[in-house]
Length: 340
Ligand code: GTQ
Ligand code: FE2
Image (cartoon, rainbow, N blue to C red):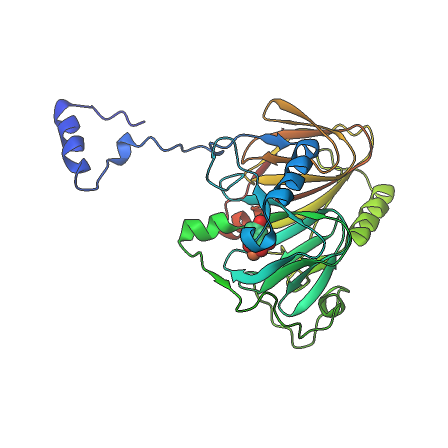
């Protein structure tokens, strides 16, 4: 706050200019500190799963378009966002169902939670998805999903739709058919981009051209590094998913990570300007976020909003997926973190 003398004349001035769409900076009330109004929160899989199954009895993919339950920050009900910058949804698709093709300006990631036999089709290629897989849907790419298996399939959707909303740049189109034509062979994206090789004439675009980062390979990398190197005091063994086209993040906006915490791990508190959504792939433990302890088990989801410190404890070996707005924050020069 400024120490300018707040004279009666100044008060009249401030009042007079309000009707002109003007406001004096010296009276500003907007926070000049890191953090956001959002609060840490935890959703238990034991609570989520029955509601997802219940939604299947009540609505089909034809009527719902996407059968998704949005996880909203308790401080922002009705916003559709889990934090200022991030969308999180849980999507369920039953055997025989199709979620029709569409495209939109927000980028989407998927982290598969439960069930086999589902696919997503992106830009003419079908990709089968399994639990633990990390999937990329680049912005403006046509995408439809289907389940050709025998049981329900659930995954978590992470979108950067808060960014398109913020910029006023949200566009969406339905494809003129239920599914898009498949003009690529299954495995094309993996062959072209999944082996630290690139097509000779590849020109880098926005999102990662690698559509699937399979769980088995991620686990293998984490387990190997756990045996060969020291743990990070806060993160255990933590890797970020890389865009093979440029070595950066899978999206211009969103970063994604997988970490391994061995049984008994007690992490040091850490904080970052990132907003982060976590999904427990395996294991159980607890996390203290900004002073609140949440006991988590497999498939639980929790959010650590910007500048909330958090520290993990692993009751058993844990594998934890997360995504954040780090890519955008780094690109803009805003990102900071801090070991406490
Ligand atoms: O699967 O295409 O959770 O477009 C939100 C918007 C999922 C999707 C969401 C979407 C999708
Ligand atoms: Fe979509």
